[in-house]
Length: 171
Image 1: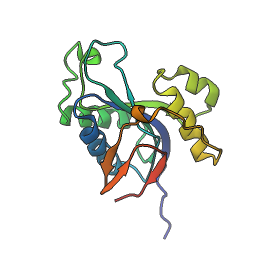
Image 2: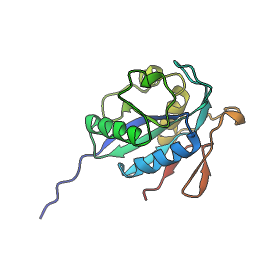
Image 3: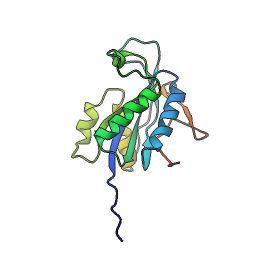
Image 4: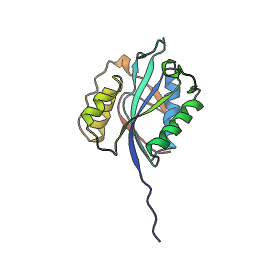
């Protein structure tokens, strides 16, 4: 008897939150564990809002994700997750409002890509994190030199994380 192996897709995912970011990023990563067979996270950095007016600082990170979902299905699932966290995606102003969780597919790793071009195309706050995660996944030395006050820390599975890239074990 033969088993049809599942197709696995690989993506670089951008995650952002500026409403209770430590809690929502941790919860968001837990949710992504349920959709993936492998998660590797970048550092978490605190950034000022871009393209919107807000007094709330963002936590941003990039996640390498391996999953059985193609990009169209994964984006639908991301939208449902964002809504379950309280984001009103039907609001025409949702892109410029504070958000508990924002999930975006930055790069389809399985496609033909040029990493320098993919990194350059990413939003400015994701570029260093994306470059760092690419280096981490390929075993290259990391240049992680942000100011300590730019690091966003979360608690995940009882551990403090955010200052260095790491793989998250599947639950």
